[in-house]
Each structure stands twice: as structure tokens, then as C-alpha cells.
Length: 79
Image (cartoon, rainbow, N blue to C red; front, side, top):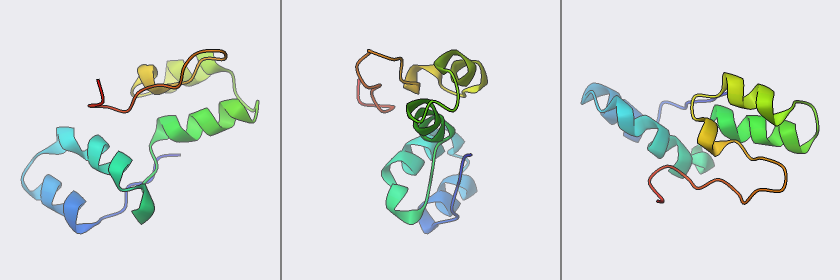
């Protein structure tokens, strides 16, 4: 489940056609209720409700999916 809340920042990005920056804004705006699909899938993996390979197949950014025994994925732009 991915949730995008229409905050002023998101509205501005859409208005200015800076769509590639929405994911980053969603990551930093979790306190406003944003949730990335990959974050939710990682929760489902941790709860053993889905397999990591199934999450990777459906993900918009497979690098953000946690693999069992692997280090936590880095947020976009943190590299």
C-alpha cells in the first residue's frame, strides 16, 4: 500500500512538474502520513506474510526491499 498525502510540498512538486522528487519527499514526510510501497512490503516481509522475491517483483524500487540477513537498504539519495 502506497500513500501520498497532498501536502503543500507535494502539490508544489506536481505543479512544477518535478515528479522525480516525489519519492524523496515521501520518504522525508512520513510524519505527514506518506508511505512508500517498499516500506509497506518490508513490513509484510518482516511479518512473514510475503516473500522478499515476490516484493521485489512488484516493487517500484527493488533496491529498497530488505533481503533476509542483508543490511538495511539505503534511502534514495543517501548513496
